[in-house]
Length: 326
Image (cartoon, rainbow, N blue to C red):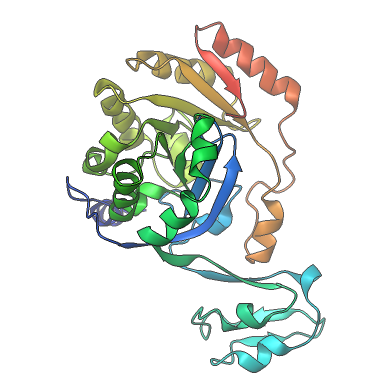
């Protein structure tokens, strides 16, 4: 991306130092209960839609685009054609092999076809929600979650790409709902004022460090890592709790030089001694087909358990506390 585009993106993600605590709206694609790897205890995780990075291995491609997306799942289709009848834009067609073709130029993502589909073969991924709506779901089982040491996690996509909504949700959960624990999963590619605007209401940042080499990071994600690493340093220096997360992909970032550089970086951060290894898997591959996108890593197999164990030993020898899978 050109420098001017990058600057424009960063300006769009900036937020004021005091979050708008009103019932603002945000774009999410899921809310999952009883998650176990998105922070301590049992949690509710809210998945934000939209991300400034475009990682080759992304297992949630539905999270990348900052707008709702309509997808069709062939194996669920009943062939009833009810979706065709309700589409006001005539954006759906039946192909010769019985598939549903979605015309992106005509489709306005109103969601009527998904609502009418009895087999749930058509799905609108992404919905605008208010802070009130999210909190109603998050707090429904709050006593059970918080008794485990859990709470609320913001994930994505990149939750900090919607800074005002994220800040309002965190503030109200902590101060109005008296939530015990908050966590934010982030790639770190936002302006520093975004972190300043909500860090006081975050108990733990789960912070991705995907590759230590700026040029390689650019090739793998579409952005270099200088801003990401600087934000991690500033968070640690400000005394914020950080866990470094390393998505581990064979032949891409599991080389000895990158592992040693990642360990050096983690150990340089005040108060940071834990790193989570997230082994690459192929569970997201079918999603690319449904979204009519090419899967960048093709036939790359999931990371073998023995390779994750080897990397764990390398990092532990450097004095880090290492968890596999978060």
